[in-house]
Amino acid sequence: MKKYIVILAVAVAGLFSINASAQSKVAHINSQQLVEAMPEAKTAQTKIQAYADTLDRDFKSMQDELQTQAKELDTKAPTMSPNMIEMKQKQLQDMQRNIQAFQQSASQQIEMKQSQLMKPVIDKAKKAIEDVAKEKGYTYVIDTYQGTLLVTPAGDDILALVKTKLGIK
Image 1 (cartoon, rainbow, N blue to C red):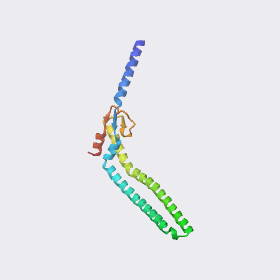
Image 2 (cartoon, rainbow, N blue to C red):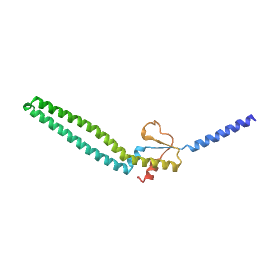
Image 3 (cartoon, one colour):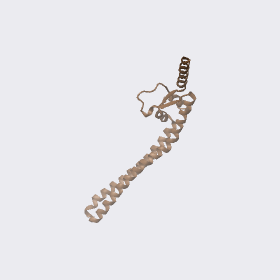
Image 4 (cartoon, helix red, strand yellow):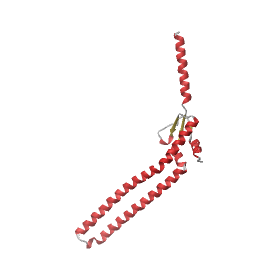
């Protein structure tokens, strides 16, 4: 009787292990390659670059104004009173602080704009990945873009399938 229980236990364990391994299908994808291939991402990047260029022009204009004011102070300093020179130097320091604050703010604004414009693209890519995984029966999809894997797992690369799903060649 004990012998039958052991055989039954081994058989049940074997069935569960076969069932578990049959249900776990692994695939991988480079999400960055997918997003870069999407036309929406290219459009978003163009808009982000145009926005960054506008802020950069404003920044350069502010720097040019600071340099102009500094040169003006250098040329007129011999004819100015010490109080006037000190006042102009403080103005230049204030301008420099404003330029630095603008530069920090511009970086944050560009990041916000990038997040705002890329979120729908990333969401669309994620949905397509989930749809393909569901259609093909994948339990796990690993993103190889993160670079945390030293060895790609034995699985299917679904980049081509997801590109097809999104209509990307």
